[in-house]
Length: 443
Image (cartoon, rainbow, N blue to C red; front, side):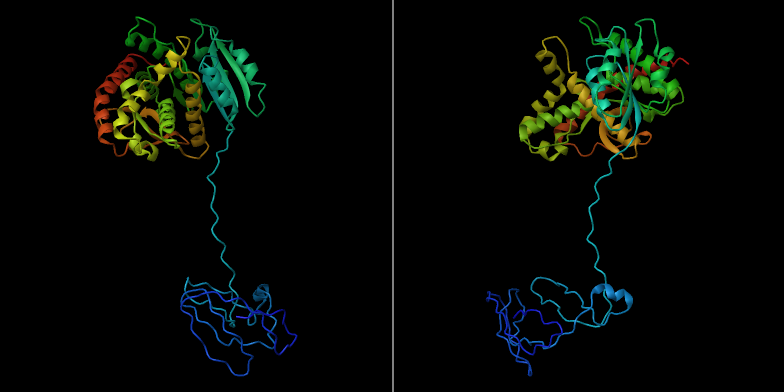
């Protein structure tokens, strides 16, 4: 086909065509000469099945076509109809017809996921300790947090007022306050009203580590008492807050606190056990092996054999050879020991725990802000018969735990492990329920 310069309405009867170099096109055919018009040399076309027009007419005086915007004024007979590509291998309709101009339909625009917005008050109980300080730092940096309250004992690693002053120098909207409780004298329910009132989320990385010669039941009673002092104060001053616990043993402490919470007539969807560190570790170890990012669900509980990473439910995890899975599974279970050994008895997992707790905290705040977010957590559950508390994927919404998701399909290894951990977790849950039977919150 020849292309012409500007013709418009200037009335040129014929013009020398500008010839385009021929290209090899399959399936070309020939059309005869149309009388009265200057013929044009046929040029083959590149689309399979497209006809070759042997004698394209030279238009002597084409009409000036009105812009499409005139169509709205009723002048539509001269407006061109836009060419419509039918498909590869079919000719294109280039004719002009007398019909109204149809406005083009805009291509759909992808909508970015909604970013949560909020100005929430968060409290970190134990915020001046080894976990509490980095935990408080991360929450103070969260754009959803406008006020951070720190509560700790007078025997904390550093004074709570010092952590407050330090964090108060970080740019951003977050206001930081602190409350100090005197060991064996002050109770949160008596002294922490200002810190807890108005809180939307209370994070509790408190408790004491197990000492040599101390049995698990003794540790449970000590740490349950510590957790109870905080949770009963939350029940009084911020009963609508989500209370997220990292008090060990989590498998027993969370059921105990949740049952006491329910005894007080409060919503159990507000009590959450933070098991996110198991997910973070599983993700890291898999990425080290495969070089691929991943999201490994971790179910069960938050201690030893009760920790069950589901490698089969993630593409990167599923790519790992089956004979490597048992050792990788055990590494996730015992990862805390790696840190204790590396710190040579001078600490445990504090930084990774703070990171993981902040990740869970941000998921909760996102849900409270109206953007449901999914994270694994240890909560009251019915997804596995016989285990009333269980860690699995949880959707956080405006009321805390919005939905506990099913655990999904398991590999043979994972199914066997679930069967092995069930009696262990049942016994640890039972210890927590026993603690709650004989106690209730102070008023």
